[in-house]
Image (tube, rainbow, N blue to C red; front, side, top):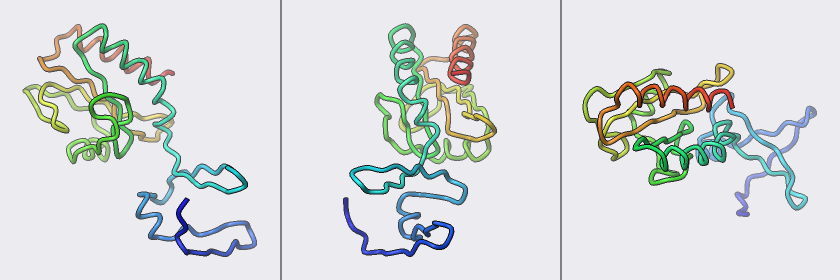
Length: 162
């Protein structure tokens, strides 16, 4: 663990201020959740990402979908792709950032390019308990037919009700 050289005093209520430089470095915003745990007698503060709770479940679902269809499923948090595969840990591009900000569903009617993937997309915001966590992205190299769209909706419902 690297020392920052920054020292903070704990106030009467047990609070400390996380320095702005560290908040900026870790992209911690007002109202973000921080996970607190102890490791080897050290107090660890970590930016909590509710979307990561979906990761292991979603990774298994990605395998099932990949093995049984030509649809690819990707899941993001507000910053990066979190499901395993070719985009894992890649930053999301501006078009996806805008969908997160607007909390909008997107369905491409023509071939599109998102995060260097060329094809067709159905994208849903992940909203749980009114918190926006990221995006569900369904991708195909060919246009989605009605059966594909129904399949995507079923997968979406399974993930939302997990």
